[in-house]
Image (cartoon, helix red, strand yellow):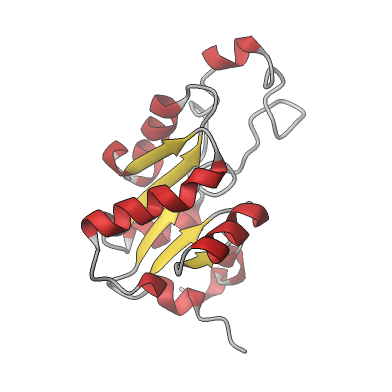
Amino acid sequence: MTNKIWDLMHKEDTVVFFDIDGTLTSYNYGEYHAHHELDFTPEFRDINIYANCKRLEPIYAYIKGHDMDRIFCISREPHGHEKWKSDMVEKLYGIPSSHCFYTLEAKDKPGIVTSVVNRYFHDLNPRSVICMDDNDETLGMYMKVTEFSTAHPMIFMEHLNDA
């Protein structure tokens, strides 16, 4: 069986929902840890971990070559960092903050994506919606409760030389 996700990602009508942490950012926020050292503390709410994030060039190349009206973000955000996250994805990738959706629980991601798709792309084949996430449980959840396609961000590393 041949994986068809890469080809699907490059179709004009495809809609992509990117997770943010670990997908559009490398998830290396601390000095010596992937998590910021103050994560899991009350002080963490006041730290903008997104201020110094770097653009992931293979993902940026894909996004800038796709219709921005079909690019969205969906992210779990329990720390109140929604504005900083949205500012970061707009600065690094050009994704408007109006295309960023947040939830406290990852289990709500499929419902949010479904709602956006039904509102703006109701005639689109569900297979033409790609939910990209770095979390295996979240990818499995999309697969179980939607007809959307799923992808892991490592797909960009697999296709580095395909440009």
